[in-house]
Structures are given as structure tokens and as C-alpha cells.
Image 1 (cartoon, one colour):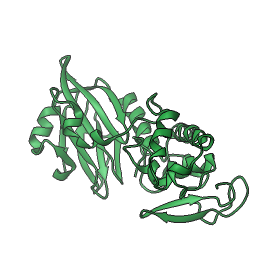
Image 2 (image 1 turned 90 degrees about the vertical axis):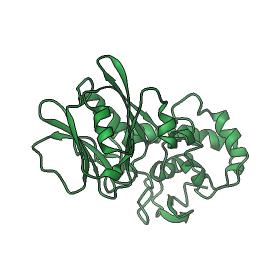
Image 3 (image 1 turned 60 degrees about the horizontal axis):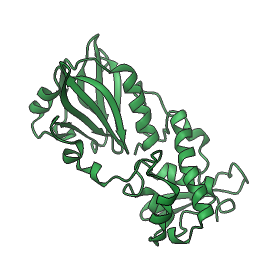
Length: 281
């Protein structure tokens, strides 16, 4: 599933090519890809003629602010889920069998929503409604990792009350928004903490290292254009480059980049966790 760096990479790419260009038409090829409104006709009518003035990201969600004749026209929301892609292409490009939604712009360009496993969704949110009232998953999100609210004291308070493994805590979107399996493993490696260590047993010094490591691995991956292990592509169909330098994720039995000890993989709450038995305690 695309995580914060991948979604941020898409947001930045869309901001470079789609702003202030009106939507001239569209085609929904799979109706269940539209979460709101229920009617596909209403969805297309709502965004027709609207311009995207800003692309925002909240956790793993994308939000486009829409305007029509300088008046608010609501929001276009998207969650890529496991295999979703937003691709900026020429309209003459052959349409793949996994294309679910097409939005047409001037100069024979279009934005295609492609989703092999069809778990992703698009929303149109009316201008009078806050996005979280329609995209209800937004209500459950904790602070952004780079926000002031995600402070060391916040983490100390949150971790002190919980006995769950730290890897599971990092995947909890109510604790911090946008981190998934890849960057939880990476941040734990940089902070020297094993995935199974209980939250309430992490010292203040180690928690400080974890706080710093979370921001570092996310920044590093954003600069690398995200991670492509299977489906992720940026808006031009290009792979992310972070996977080639990952510390532990998806490197089971490969030598640790620091000490050469083979990387281990375990299961936690049904998810894989990768770590170095020597560097992480």
C-alpha cells in the first residue's frame, strides 16, 4: 500500500501539472471506485468545469481543492489503498484493463485512476461539507509526522499508556498518520529498537531516537520518490527509488548494511516485520 512518501510524491507531481486546468469531461469505468456521491453521473457533473487550485495530503489521503469561476466547488478526494495509481497521460495512450476512472483536461491530457485490486476510492465532497464528514476515514487520523503536534512529549504520553509492540503502534493511524509497514521497519532500525518491544518499556532516550528516525526515513523516501516494491508509480509511471537503499524492509536473510548480520523477518498482528538482530535490541 502506498504510504506517506508515495502519496506525497504523487501530490507533488499532480501539483506541477494539473493546477488551474479545468476538467473538461470524464468517464467512470468501474462505478464502485466512486465512494461519493452514489450516482456516477452526479460525481462527474460535480467536477465538470472545475479547476484544481491546490493538492493537499492528509495521511495517505489526497485532497484536491476545486473552484469554478473563482467560487468554491468542493473537494476531489482519493485514497489509493493497495494498488491505486494516478497517472497523467495523453488521451491517445491505450487504456489498460485496470483503469477505473478517466478525467479529461485540455491539450489532450487526462488523469487516469488505475487500480488493479479495486480497493481504492474517489470522493467528491460538496463545498459546504468539511471533507471529514464525507471521507470519514479522515476522522480517525492522528497528527502528521512533520507537524508540531507530533512532538516527543506527545509520543511519550501515547506510548506510556500502551503495552502493545512498538511496530503495531507505528502502524496505528490514530497515533500518527501516514506510516505503514515499510517506514515503520526502517524507523525502528535507525532507532535501534526491535519491532516486538513494548511501547511502555521504551526509554525516553530511545523514544527520542525513534521520533527523529521517523522523520528522517520519511524525508529520505520522499526525496527518492517513494518506494516501489510492486505497484507504486508516480504520475508519469516512474518507479520510486527508496527500495534500493532500504535498511531492512523486504531484505530477509540479506546482510545488514551496518553489521552484515542476516536480516530477520517475523509476523506481528498478521504483518511482516523486518529487523537486524544485532543492531536492534
